[in-house]
Image (cartoon, rainbow over all chains, first blue to last red):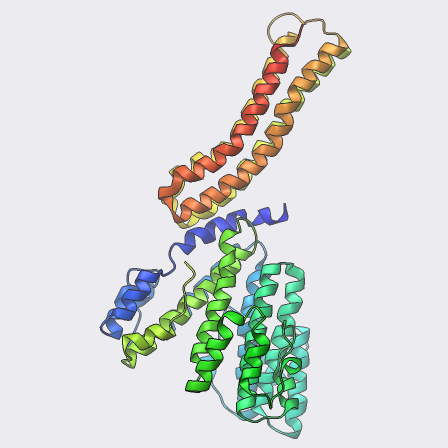
Length: 333
Length: 157
């Protein structure tokens, strides 16, 4: 019975889903003759309200940010378990903390990168914590990481450490939150996400010829696959493909890695990985009551925003239509 | 008051009570989902109201059964009938099919129509199909009412 509390929220999300961009609108954007024409297609969608406020076509990022904010705030308002939205909002907190720490420790002040309003932790709290170097008000995993960073920076300034430790802390916090939500759908999503990030990390570390110790530090916990046990850094990439052939990632790992070997970019791999995750996300379509459709909507919206961004970047840089299409992700609807 | 009469009244109460609770829960679930859809798309009110009302029928069936029993005992209109304990028990049993089936079928029907409401939020043209799924649950409430009435009718009182 407990999932019945989602009756209202899921009804609402189902109605909101009808306004997500479908294949045909995406196609029309891709086929548009210019960036302006592509934006015009958005005039028939939910994005219409932001279009008037755009200064020029390069301003599309503001529009996408506004839309993402709107979705987070709205879902937070009507979700029976606001922690569900908080799970996905974690990334904003850690992103903000990274920006603030880098600003403080290395003097790279980039306030424009800060995300306001949608995080779980008010920006003011984070700013105060960083300025006073007092992290006691922050969630425990975040606090530990921040203190560790402060400690390490006394000896040596290492910006990479900020990313490494905070990324790890973020997933520790996410999986801690997942325990409370008790949804296998969400747990699977984040497990797959961690696995895919770890595969990418492995590829990057291998490429930059870093040490095994570094790899171990960079890999995230909670994945299904333990990369350090699966492959050695000295192994050729074929070994990785081979080892993953019997896993759930088999359907795209060969294609992704081979393209990476040929082209030296992870674009194709990332696209295939995103599509794999989206396929899992789509399972929420068959859930009538529960947190799944809400989570799926957030992820569908983030995916949509990514797709629009790919199209706009392509159009502004006048990439051929075919090339943009190659980069596009599936859509949720 | 005699025990037989008491048992019959218990039957009338059980039929109305259980089926009514079921309908209330069923409509409650469907109504919440409908409200969610309406808050985004108010034009769908007409379609959702029909589906939301479906789990309400069990409560009505229960009420009908309750009335029938009360009429038979003479509590409503007429003189009190002297009922033996077996007769009273039989009237109580007559109430059970619609009471229990009405209770649970209304809850599950509520879930089925809530899913149907989610369906028409996306594809209003498929309203008929959403309706059919809800009505399929209704069949069993109707069967239960039928059995309740048969027991009631063929009772030798």
